[in-house]
Length: 477
Image (cartoon, rainbow, N blue to C red; front, side, top):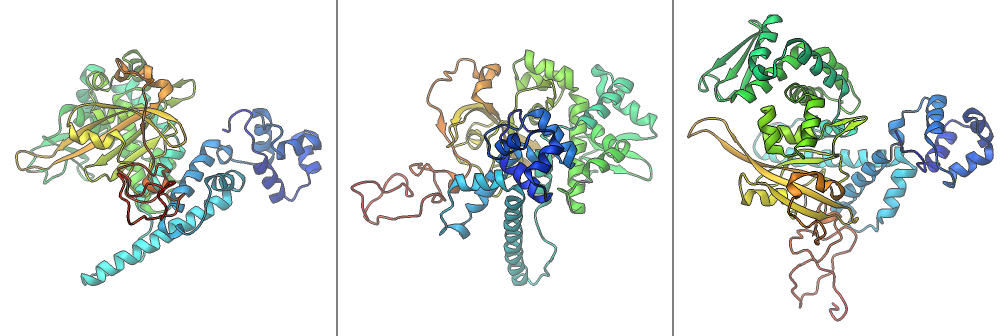
């Protein structure tokens, strides 16, 4: 819901015009005077919470469409889209983009979807060229990645699903014993006619979990430690016993393809498994009392570092919220494979994040937690931690993929985290950005591309530490 006192005059005016109403007619339906409605539309009076609810009731309006967070995310999406070299010759002030998202969200959304279609078509042509050169066919249905659709779906829900929390709590109350989690999960499965078996790593042929519907058997690899076996059994339970709920949640316009819905079901089954291993209230209480010490929480709840970080982002229950965190996972090439932001920080949608983020530097010190005080171009300051993860899928000859995860919050919450102990939070933060194209810091020595806001100008007779630094006085071309 939009915040109390939100100024949404342009949105109200647009709604009135779409309904074909005069100010007098709309004022009557909202039970206010025409003069007061006029002040609201001119942003001289706020749209208060009671009036907002009346507006939603009178016009069957989804309040999420008025959320300032949604408008901010849409404007940021547009700015990243306009960072494409396609728009390099255009002068697109950020203020105008924000105005478009605020005042005409439907139009702004249409522009962004058009850009997404353009990207999909361009990627399709690239794929077509590559496949023709290899003598292969071309799939004309190649469009947006399902992972992008699922990220949007999770972000809109603020990565919090009350129905899944309730389902996990029901299972916990009926069947689970905290000290014997795996055994009690296996007994719960047996009570539903399911069998759980462990097989040798070589017999699993690279699989960690599989389900045989004919024998109703969940087969786990011996390579999984006990805590991972718990997670995988709970995940499979969700896919089987909570299937109707998963189907209901993923029947969403943001998930238009079968692939996107299937991937979303996997993500929600993971969410359920996390809620089973880390029940909401005990986990929130422990997180607060241990000051969000991820390693400590990992030991207490028998979950991995990444699972703890991910669970911390889901604590959005009204009246029982945890710290609003952002989370991302990258590989050594900088590809973002998972991301979510409740802290307000912008995480790149179409490219790798800023190389100054400490999640990249984590690869320099494997297994160690790195901290960072940072500041975005808009002046917002963040406190972040990052650490590498190593996923082993076999013995000596098995793959040992390394990734890094980053977890962060606004600086105002830093003292609530154990990782801030001993740090001077008043020291100068590291200047970071979203991507090079959206960052205005032209003097950054790690800049890889010129910023969207300034055309590229080159002085051939001058070399500075940053190739894309703005030319100043006395440095004329």
